[in-house]
Length: 369
Image 1 (spheres, helix red, strand yellow):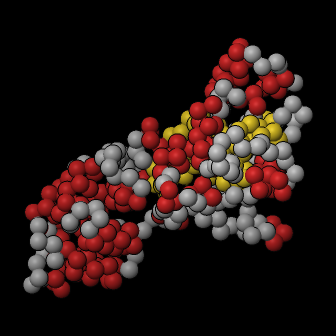
Image 2: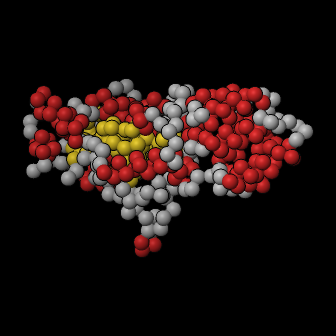
């Protein structure tokens, strides 16, 4: 008998609950596949030792920061050339931009050399461009990004956005994964260790996962967008090691009344589990996601609507509060079948309950061999 199963078979006492929580905290960890994932994602930066961005540089702006920080010499060269421009010498400067793009192995040098020249000629603060160039050349990516944003009218300004778009197209990354995924240089913000994660899926798939665990993953090279062709006419090849989830704390922090369907965007049911991996920003999806080795987690809770639970023939709890409690947290009952532990009106309140009480009630999780 597995030790986790042995713990779960014991009578619930303060001691067995403490042992179960301690076991869960120790057992979920980094696997060799997770370490390989970290090397792969960090490889997108091409060995550049970037500074961690300011705390306010998050989400899409973090991706912009990383995009420029991966190629600081190219950024410095473009900005230095731009600092010498004015409205009278735009056409004469185009060959210099074209040469910079071609030497770096860039793309569409003729097209983007014209765009850089036209854009940077219109920037009044040429000294700011020169200062930004010097900072990037010195590897001071945090200060360089801040100075550039200030010079171009702020991070949300159209000129900053246009510059980054031109740069990312003129100096593209080699793969779709690299173009769409970025990792915060601060390991404390990018490495996830034994955290509660949320994986959205359908009720049918959620029950299958609860019974036997995750059983498929994407391959390296097809993480951002799985375009690989599977065998026997399958749409995708799921012979890889990795799946996606969300940090449960992030989900609750970002939840608002105006974004009621936030937790539903990848399925009507939530598989909530302890896991480890890497938190990346996915530009294409516009959100932070945690990539994990699908074989690493050892158990989960489920969050399912009362309607779907009834459709699947599961037991449900009667409402204990005023109003209709639409969602149920399911664990494993004594008979091994899904058993409703608590119910709430909102799905995120179920996830919040797991965050607060999940370790204490870990003996009631669905467990996988």
